[in-house]
Image (cartoon, rainbow, N blue to C red; front, side, top):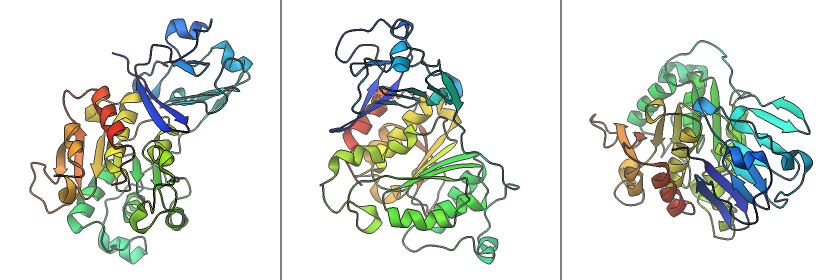
Length: 331
């Protein structure tokens, strides 16, 4: 079954839609895009873009996108792979922007910048590239994470910091990180490779460990788990969740990988502090993921984190329900 994951920005937050072959409101437009199952956004309605393996897509060619007619001008429609507004259609899944007939290649920030190397704490300290933080990763976490980074060519992180330094030490070619604390994000950016991408997920005033101080900006909270992913046109080898909105973030990472053609065996998702919260706050993660390393895995370890594969038999719709349930859960 073709599944399309859609995120629609609005005053009420973020809504995902799966397999949306029906119109949401208004009448079908005359565009051939509707009839061929390609993306079309008219009067805030939409049909899916066909996403192929590793992010390939059928470019959006509907006339309304080029002519600036019959589109929702207030927010646009954001798809894992596609953005349509009243002025242009951005087909991120195919890495092409179509703007008034002009095609622009959108590059993925991937750069081979030295020989890959395994994480060595002693060498990393001597180089001034890393030091152990307090209250975060333990030694078992570091070793599992370091090996996973070394084996990965692309990494996505929610919650940046010590893990970002380990990632850079192993010289991962493609990295994207997102955090809710803008001042902390700026500090990490200063010491990170220039081609690494970073996003600030604004959730309003934050306190320690980026927990929201109040609910004044709750309408923006769902974007924390999905906004940065929507800007990435290819799946990642490894997604590490160590910021806020962790259950929603795990679900969003799995949906992002699926939308960009990755099978469950072709990527991993990690979540920190799983030992402490698996039985209560993060228990729904076990509905969609199976631990293969770290806590609750077959391997005995003192790690707090868990490395997961998508659970066998779980559908995108199942994962979407978990995201919906936890999209405003800042845990």
